[in-house]
Amino acid sequence: MIQMFHVYKAYPGDPPVLSDINLHVQKGEFVFLTGPSGAGKTTLMKLIFCGEKATKGQILVGGRNIARIRESAIPYLRRNIGVVFQDFKLLPHRTVEDNVAFALDVLGVPRAVARERVQRMLKLVGLQHKASSMPLKLSGGEQQRVVIARALVNDPTILLADEPTGNLDPALTLEIMDLLMDVNARGTTVMVATHDHSLITRYQKRTLRLENGFIVSDEDGVKAARRMAAG
Amino acid sequence: MSVFAKTAYFWRSAASGLRHAPFIHFVAVTTIAIAIFSAGLAQATGRMVEALIGSLGGEVQVTVYLSPELDEEGAAVLRERMVALSGGRANLVPPRAALERLATELGDLGEALAQLPENPLPPSLELEVPQERRTPGALKALAQQLRAMPGVTGVDYGEEAVERLSAISKALRYGGWVAFAVVLLATVVIVSATLQLAIYARRGEIEIQKLVGATDRFVKAPFLIEGFLQGLLGAGVALAGLLAFERLAGPGLASLFSFLVGPGGMVPLLEPRIALELLAAGCGLGLGGSFIAVGRFLRV
Ligand SMILES: Nc1ncnc2c1ncn2[C@@H]1O[C@H](COP(=O)(O)OP(=O)(O)OP(=O)(O)O)[C@@H](O)[C@H]1O
Ligand SMILES: [Mg+2]
Image (cartoon, rainbow over the protein chains, first blue to last red):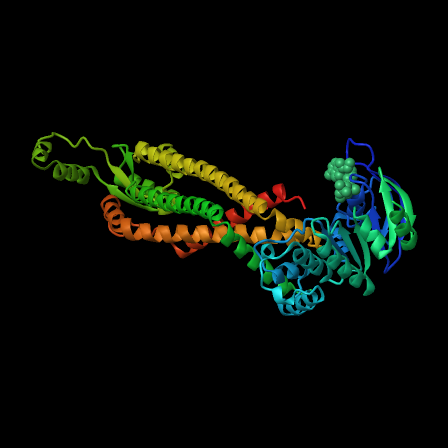
């Protein structure tokens, strides 16, 4: 589903923030991306949804080479990728329902159809009773669930979550993580960037570790969990 | 994928843009309204000046003085040639008739003319030039041709007055165009600046749109519609203003005009065709401004 071959990324004037990245994420896999601050986790995710362009190397997403993708084709790529950030990025003056529907408006889905799909998504994330609330009146965990609903409403094959629980307390963190596991169980390929080692220990999923722009380890869930437990 | 749903979305989005930043859009609409209102007034003024010049031109009569040696037959031949040349009508005024006319015009003083031993006035031809040839240039050319004819001693058509008037109307027209261009430029700049603010105000929304896979055109369309709506609204306000102006100032203007030109000389301030043109100009301004704003500030 996601493949990288000798990928480099350097921001103009700086040394590379990603160097010689090689990875292969299967369809339906769940992958943690971890590493110290500044290691390049966010940058790696941006490369996948064309938020940034790789300096060198090949990137295949869904079999499509995006290293040489045309500007005008990027929107269509993104419709297959749901993105969730630590800082939610919700529209404060629109209802929960409208925020989720926003991703369908962009595709020209008629309102009636959109409404029905939005209801289904809100139910999935357990927020059907908050459909007409304003985002700022929700808790952080609820807001992040709205974002996840928005990322999923379009049925993407890939979900990228960049520190989705970074702003949440431990209870809400587990709530969101369980939701992401659910999403993965339904067949969506999920990649989660996190600092939180306890998540890796708890969920035991494949873990990629980035340091200084290099992938320093790529382990299956059991190994990764054992290493984390060992400190 | 539904074109209808997208279109509906664009209009909703543009309308909500107008609703959520009313002050910004108020500035843009007002600017467009002022520009269109001025343009409307300017074109009405232009047409009034033109009507004025036309009516003065109507009094322009070309008088051709003939050599006193010319006999009636020769004068008649000349008259035929002039009619053919000018395409108008010519009226031969024999010296006796000219003297009588002068006497009547002078009134009591005219008595003195009768005492003259012989008529000092030459025979003349009064040439009425058709409307379309009353332009200064055409009159000048005609006068030159007439002067070159044998038997013609002089041609008089109020040269100076006509030329001065036409110079004034030309200056007015050029001045009008320059002013219009300046106003146009200023309006486009202001409209695009307001739309830049609108784009800035919605940058969060735009960021999310791009994240969920909106195409460039999808992101841009609502702003173009906003510009178009600003133009439409501005032009509408301007037209209402022009109508109100006509109501209020119309009677005064009309009486001034009938004094200057004669009854029925008043031109209407707003004709349907011109109203439509102004409306189109307003929409063009709004759309132009938003095109610039979207092109410069919305690098998606
Ligand atoms: N737009 C940018 N321009 C220049 N440098 C950037 C840009 N974005 C990130 N960087 C640099 O790239 C490096 C990697 O940043 P990145 O955000 O990918 O790290 P991260 O692993 O996500 O860190 P964190 O855990 O703090 O989120 C950092 O040194 C950062 O300063
Ligand atoms: Mg980051």
